[in-house]
Image (cartoon, rainbow, N blue to C red; front, side, top):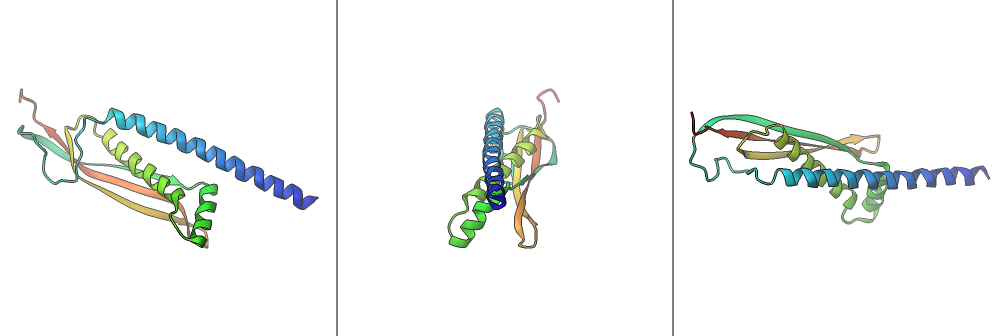
Length: 154
C-alpha cells in the first residue's frame, strides 16, 4: 500500500510538472512573439557595416542581452530517455530556441533608440547539474554594435 501511494505521488508530481512546464513555455512563447512584432522595423544583421543608409553615424556602442533558462524536470526526463534511444532531443531544441530569441529581444530592448544593430553575435552555453552532468540550464548571450545616425539638424 505504501509503495502504491508513493507511486501515485510521483505520478501526480510528474504530471503537474508537465502541465505547469507547458503552460510556462506557452506563455513565454506568446511574450516572445508579441515583443518580436514590436521590433520588426529595426534592422539587425551579422554584417560588420551599416546597411543601406547614407546618413553619417553619430555614435555607436556595444549592446548586449543575456538570458538563462532552466530545463524543467519533465523535459530533463524526456531528454534522458532520448539519449538512451537516440534521435532529436526536441525538449532541448525548444529550450535553446526560446533562449536565443529572448536574448535577442533583450539586446534590442536595451537600446530602443538605436537605428541599426550590426555585427550581431550569439553565444550559447550549457550549465550542467548533478553528478551525471545533465543540462540544468542554457545561457545565451547576444551582443552587437548599436548604431545611432546623426539627426538632420546636427
